[in-house]
Image 1 (tube, rainbow, N blue to C red):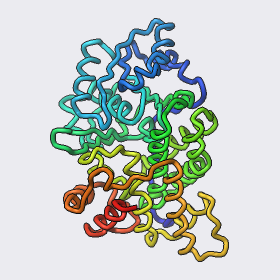
Image 2 (image 1 turned 45 degrees about the vertical axis):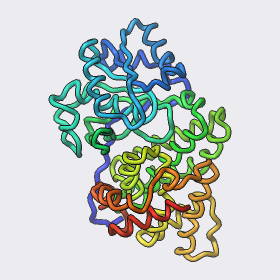
Image 3 (image 1 turned 90 degrees about the vertical axis):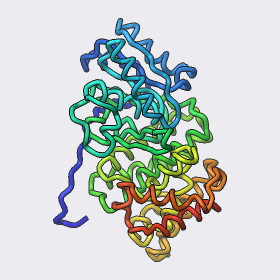
Length: 388
């Protein structure tokens, strides 16, 4: 890093991490001054009994609550409206989000709208939120999005087929309550996709142009834990150590990219996910090796370091050759955890590439990418991801 470069690191969220930590939920609600709780979670966490594990300590402490579960993958802005209406009607003054990124992003946005005027659309972009939202406790049940730590809520306008991102430190949860035991029943394919999402967060933050010493250390630690534990978490879902490592790696990766943004995989993932309904972690996994191949010459030394982190033998290689091994390592990891699809499997064809790359180029992740892309470069990345 340049000696004269000024950087900033800010993370307002409190972290409580550990097996069984969910049992302390009522204590945290009281400490934050909550009188009535809105629990926000998708139908899956309700059916799996996860919400019951939250309501049990609330009941024991005589803390009233309401439940809002009308949330789908890639949550629509209408979910924020509905959840806010319910919270206000029920007199809820604290939000508990439980689940994956869709639930947590919705919960955070509801917290914002409980104290801010207008519509959530008014706050799309960066630092447009006017005042601190209602307290939000984020309880992740997947190890991937890092939404329990980030400034971002990624929402969809499904009528317009676009993704909308709200970014503000006011949008960070007040508390991330992270209990690895809640992730043990996550199916292998979701474990794989969310784990690859966490890896993409750590890796893109590490190599991009906005990286700084604090985020770099976080990215390295996250990648080391993912290299060690993602395969095990996928094939041994009951392995609590692997689940612990992956939930922590996801959280740490979010702490890294919160201050740096990401890169081309995420820039392309948003339009591809919006138009072709590709799960976010899956589309990142498909794109990541091809984006890495394009980016190598923009940060050769760091890609060589990534190869080492993922166990590649590079002692007798040049730095450029070592950097190439990082692409091989991540492609191997992706395949090992069962993500072998291509973009073509989701219906992406050559005639779609113009509007995909034009939307991707508008992303704030493009300027920080280690190599400046042209529209044709982005098309070539997609073409490679359509066939491999």
